[in-house]
Each structure stands twice: as structure tokens, then as C-alpha cells.
Image 1: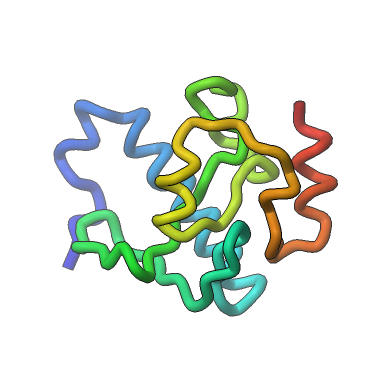
Image 2: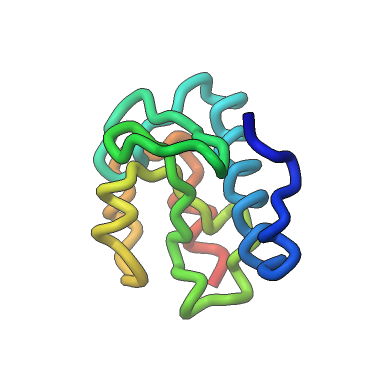
Length: 119
């Protein structure tokens, strides 16, 4: 069982808040759509892991910042900027900025329109 509030968060509050935001986003998407699929490649049945669990990179759901937070810090807590992604797609994208056409399997049919309105 995970600690609800780990001690390390006290020294890295920003990272903890971002993790909480990302997990909240993923849980919201799972509640709305029932299942999580990678919005880039379509990989199905992605799983949300708790912060302390050992992840399986083959099925972990990640919250990708479409416009990377390293370049668009003002969008780091903007849900319209978030994409459900498998580990592989998120890791391959890294801090790159790509076109909205890379979102081939949007959970929300309005996702591309939303992304186009945020910058």
C-alpha cells in the first residue's frame, strides 16, 4: 500500500503536485471513457499506477504534455494540453513539439480543436 503523502514530497512539492495533477487527469479520462488507450498509437487497456508501484512499461498510462512543459511551463497544469499516452510514445516524443496530426486516436473527438486553441 502506498503512503498517501510521502515524505519526499516535502523537498519536491512541484514534482508532487504535477504527479497528482497527471494522475487526476488520467483518472478523469478513465471515468469518462471507461478505458485508457494511447491517443498517439492507439495501444489499448493502459493502466494507471500509484506513484509507489513498480510500473510495467508495456501497459502504463502516462499523461503527456502535448506542448512540453519544458517549453510551455504555463501549460503544465492545463488539461487541454494533456494527452493519454503509452510509455513508448511519451518516451519517444520527449520534449519535442509535434503536429496535432500525431494524435491519431483521440479519446475526445474535440481534442485536436482544444489543443489548437491553447497557444
